[in-house]
Image (cartoon, rainbow, N blue to C red; front, side, top):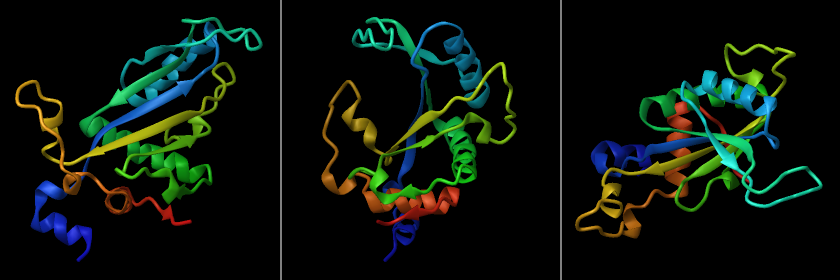
Length: 181
């Protein structure tokens, strides 16, 4: 029995996207960071949060607590719309999504090397080119029991999202090709 048949029979077992985290590692503060904030805001439709350096690294001119990156967390329909565009950009760049990108509970990450690969984006010499890391987190209905305030409980192992389920979900929902190694 395939996962698709199980999901139709038991909707509580169908995985869904909990969140999509988009990370821009700019590496420096200043103009490049503010331009990157505008780029990520146009791609996602949300204002980014600045990420700070954890350590000082004089070789790169980075001090502790200096803003060096940006991140945005998307949920719901915004996350799905962004993922559709991200997979288009991923295919345009000629990259392949490997099964090893998925962890044992179905979450996965991939990178888009150039933001201009997204639909509707054009190269602008004043902006430059930014790459990004995209992390997708899955859940199933009922995961709230592990984070609620009252009567908190654990998720049983049989209700966790499996790697194979996440791969099938991504292939069916977004038409992405996942290569087994």
